[in-house]
Length: 255
Image (tube, rainbow, N blue to C red; front, top):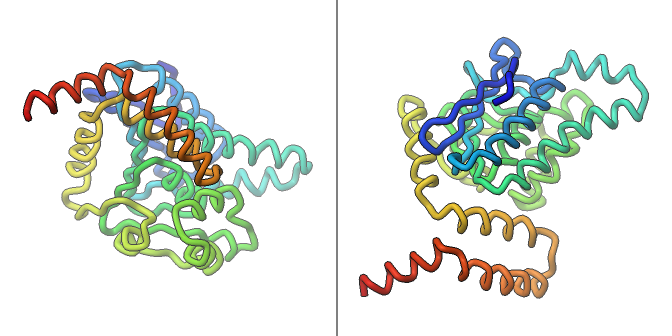
C-alpha cells in the first residue's frame, strides 16, 4: 500500500475506507490529494478482498472543493498549465466511473463546489442530516465546469441549472428529495448507518454489481436501441458467471 500524506486508506472486512485528511483546509482538493485519491482507488480496485469503497472526509466537512490558494497560484500560469491542472481532477472523476467496484460517498458537514462534484461522482451518496451541498463557483465568477457534467446526469436540466447558477446551498433532505443523493441518516447514527449500508452492499454479488455499474455508465450516451442491444450482450455474459448460475440454482431449489 502506498504512503499517503493527505488521505487515509484502510480496509475493514471487505470495505475500503478512503478518507480525505486535510481537516484544517476542510479537505480542499489540491494536486496532492487528487493524486493520492487516484492511487488509492487503483489500489482498492486491484485488491481482491475489497468489494465496496467508501469515500469520506476527516473532521467536520466532507470537502470544500478546490484549494483556492492553489487555484490562485495556478491562475498566474499559462492556459496550457491551467488546463493540465484542471485535467488532473477530470481524470479522477473519470477514474471513479471506470473503477468496477461500487463507490459510496459518505457526506457529513459541507460538500461544496468540487466537493459536491466529487460526492456526486460516486455511485451512491449517503449523508448526515446536517450535511449541506452547494456549487458556489458562480458567486466568485468561476464556472462549475467539470462537475456540471455529473450534475446534469443526476438531475433534470432545469434543476441542475438552478443549483449550479444560484450558488445556494441545499440540505441533505432536499438533496434526497431531488434525487441528488440516495439516503439520509440522523447525525447520531451516521457512522453506524454508513457501515451498515456499505456492509449490505458488499454482501451482494460482486460480479453482478460490477457488470451493472459498467453497463449503466456504458449506455450513458447511447440511443435507446444501442442500449438495449448492449444489454443483450451483457445479459449473455451475466448468465455465464458463477454468481448467476449459483443464484439460479438456489432460487429453483427453494421452489
